[in-house]
Image 1 (cartoon, rainbow, N blue to C red):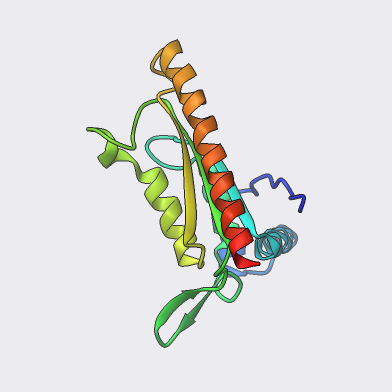
Image 2: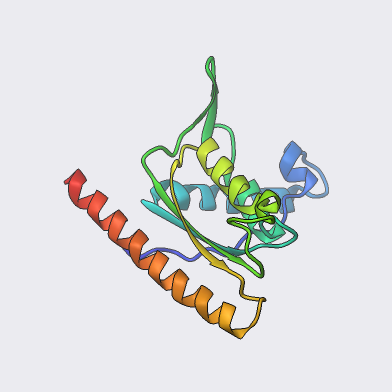
Length: 171
């Protein structure tokens, strides 16, 4: 059902990380509250959609800031005798990854830290059903940009059909 569109939070600051009190107490409390809201929204969602450009071969810092707010022990993962266990099992994710060049294949593939990082962090918190829509080559000329958009539309339609089919099979 409807979804919420989240803006990434501020980058996590030292008082938030160490839960220090003092001069920055109000700022730290506000960051904790914002992170808790993001964690609850993520826990309540059936499908997570992350759309992000590639910056220097990786996700942008604003997405990393959101990740720093939601990946928290006891909230989205837990430490157990068997090691860390994701607490968000059974959820699905769609990554819409925009890139100026082509990084899913060819000589630049080894520089794609964007998709591997996002798949890894999602898997760490228990989200392993991840589909990817790649919007690649958008800076390689007008024809490449147009082809990237057509391809992304086709990929998106495929992902929606697959998710719809898997939801019907569950019922």
